[in-house]
Amino acid sequence: MSGPTPHIDWESHADLVVVGGGVAGLTAARVAAKAGLAVLTLSKGGPADTATQYAQGGIAVVRAGLGHDSVNSHIADTCAAGVGLCEEPAVRSIVADGERALFMLTELGAEFDRGPDGALDSTREGGHSERRIIHAGGDATGAEVQRALGSAGVPVIFDAAVLRVLTDASGVTGVLARTAEGLGVVHAPSVLIATGGLGQLYTCSTNPEGATADGIALALDAGATVADMEFVQFHPTVLFAAGGLGRRPLISEAVRGEGAILVDADGRSVTAGVHPMGDLAPRDVVSRAIASRLRESGADHVYLDARALPGFSARFPTITASCAAVGLDPSADLIPVAPAAHYACGGVVTDVHGRTIVPGLLAAGEVARTGLHGANRLASNSLLEGLVVGDRAGQVAVERARLNVEATEVELRQAQTVPRTLLQALMTAHASVVRDGAGLASAAAALGSESASVTPSAGAAYEDAALTLAASAVLIAAALRTESRGCHTRLDHPDSDPRWADSIELSLGPDGRLRTPELEPVGAR
Ligand code: SIN
Image (cartoon, rainbow, N blue to C red):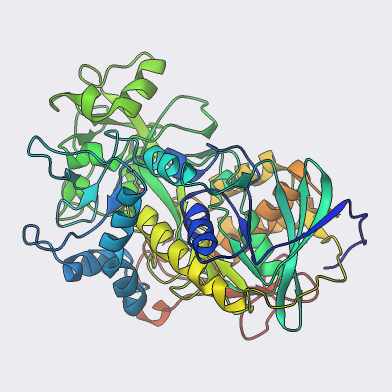
C-alpha cells in the first residue's frame, strides 16, 4: 500500500538497474554493459556479503564428450529431486546452457580445481547420479565465482538499498533507492532483482545476514507474482553449536560425496533404509531423516564422520577452518551437524530469461522461480541457474533500453513488520523441515497479532518488512498445501497427493494482502 511522498536527494538515469551483487546480478550487469547499456548495479551490503561468496560445493555442469554423463541425466536428476514440480522445458533450457556458462566464467579468469592430468576435477553431491560438480579452491567455489565476476569491471555501488521498484501502466520506470547520498530515484526501463534468498526467516541459516527476502517484497509490491514459497530447503549438514544463531558454517554435501557418513550419537547410520542413495539422497530426504532421528532420540544434532577421508584439509580448506574455529579436526573428530535454512526453492515467477509478468521487471538467481527447482533444488544447480539466467536477463534488458521512461508518483510503501527475533522463532518452530496445520495456523495468527504498520525508508525496518511479507507467503502456501512434497513435509499430511502436483502462486492485492490467482485474499496478512 502506498505511503508518504519522500524528499528526494538525487536523481539519475540508467538503461538497467541491477539490484544485488552476487552471481546473477554481476553476470547480468556485465552482459548488459557489454551490449552498450548504461547499467547501475546497487548492492545493499559490501563486496563479499552475498550468498554466492559462501557457496561451497560447486557448479553442476555436464561437459560434452566426458564419460557417460549427459544433459538428459542431469535433467532427470533435477526433476527427481524436484518431485513433480520442476518445469521440464525450463530445466532443459537451463541445464543445457551450463557448459557455455562455465566457459564464460573461465574466460573471465575463474580457476577451477583440476586433477593431476590437468583436466577439471568433479565431485558428486546429493541427488546426482554422476560426478558432475565442478569446484574451486576445494570448497570455496562461490568465492572464486564472486572474485572472477567482481574483477570483470562491473562497477557496483555498495551499501545501496533499493526500497521500491517504480512502475506505471507501461511497466518499470525506475527505482527508489537509499545510498550514502540519501534517497534517490533512478529512472530506468528495466530492473533486475537479484537479491538472493530469505534465510534470515529462521534462527539458523547458511545465508549471509542480508538474506532478508528484499527481492520478494520488491517484486510483489511492483505487481509480480511469487510461487513455490513453501519449499524452503534446509541443508542437512550445517555445523552445530549449542545456542548457535544467525549464519552458521556449511559442511558441504561434497564431503558426503567424497565418502563421509552421517551417524547418530550411537554410531548408527542416519539414512540406512531411507532411500536407495543413502547419505547421498536428495537434500530434503536427508534433512527429514535427520529431523526424524532427532525427534526419536531427543538429541539436537547428529554427526558427520569424515575421518576416513584422505587429505581432508587440502580438499576442504574452508570447512577445516570452520571446524578448527570450534576446536574440531575433521580427520580425527566427528563433526556435529544439524539441518539449517539454506535455499528458497521458490520465489518471483519468471521465465528462463528472467522476465516477470511486469514489463521491464526481471529476476534471477535465488530470488527467482524459473521452474528449475520445483519442490526441492538439486545440489549445485543454483550457481548454474544464476549464471545462465543472469546472462539471459542482461540480454533481455537490451529490448527495453533507451525506452523513454519517467518515474513519477514516488511514494514509500506502507508495510507490516514483526520484530525479527519473534519472526525467526515462529518460523523455526512452525515452518522448518517438518510442519503441521496447527503450527502453521498458530504462526500465522501470531504474525498477524504482533505486526505493526510502518513506512520503512531504510535499514532494519525495511528488512523486517520484507521478512514479514515473505514469512506470510511461506506460511500461507505451506498451509494451503495439504500434502508432503520435496522440502515441504506436513506431519498431518505425510503423503504426496497428485492433486497438488502444481505450484501455488501468490500476488499482492491493492489492500496489501497476499492472494491466490483466483483473487482470494488469504491468511493473516
Ligand atoms: C553444498 O556444498 O553442500 C551446498 C551446495 C548447494 O547448496 O548447492
